[in-house]
Length: 432
Figure (spheres, rainbow, N blue to C red):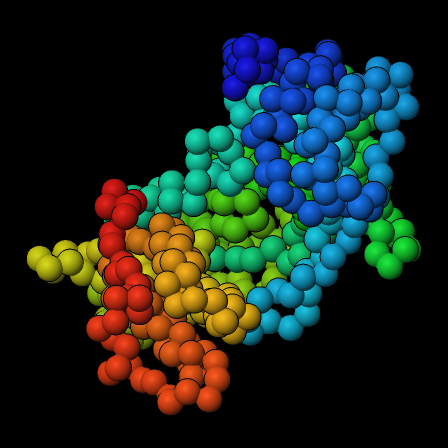
């Protein structure tokens, strides 16, 4: 973080009611170039057709032009290029993705850095998404500590229906203005919200939502749920609960743990009303509460309910289990959905690149598997991850048999070949 951003963050932390009236002066050519150095410079181009690589070659002239337009008050936010991407294996339909121009993406990210410096002091510990120094593993670790060490007997899991496309612009502007009073920054955010999306030459404008794909969308969407859910839960729900209650949120994915059933029922009713007030809605088919925790197995046995139910969070299936000493343990394994999604990616890559040399294929598949292991390599996950590894090898064998008129091969012939070996899974996050 730059010195100026550090000073802003310090002031925001010391004075929780301070409103920042002068921030646009931070958007200098030097700040924009520093921001560009932290961004993905291989991103796709927007409606102007200019790629990030082309923009980078003209970086000095481009940032000077951006700063000049900002200073003269004539900066215009171009529409994003809308692309519909498949939702994933097993799902029907597409998800809209808004791709801004390289220049607009740079300015969005620069403003997002300023917003992060201001609002980081306000965000609560229960929030883990789109925040510096936090990642999904921190959220998983917090949830595990709550379930294992706290008085947790019920878990409420929910899904917000089409969250990113239902954010109210009116409410979002009020939330940003809670801390930001600089008219230039507020004006830029308003322009981006109203920029519209271009698809097949036609521009459409939305009265709600932030376009997925914009550099500023993550911090704005996180800020929205900070006010709608996090603060409300901390100030209004927890004090009224009979027992303990905990919230863990990563972006729009959240899980709430309670000690008593009556607190879950109360929260379920209240959260629907709260979300409705801000234009949001729970997906009822994905919303439920279950018995879960240290005493769930005993309770289920007493009431003849079978085994405790499971739930999914951040790609992991959470299961009530026991360790080798018979003590309660929270077991996390990659969910079936996560495995299907990864195997669909490997299958597509193998089929499209089966003409590559075998050693080259092995090198790329190794990278894909290591990336999968890097996220899912937790305790209790090795067996499932090695099963995924075997499925990748079976896909590979199938593709090799389709390369030509050669004799078909099989597992017995290839399992000992050096070029066919793929890495085994490991526990890469022993403390999570």
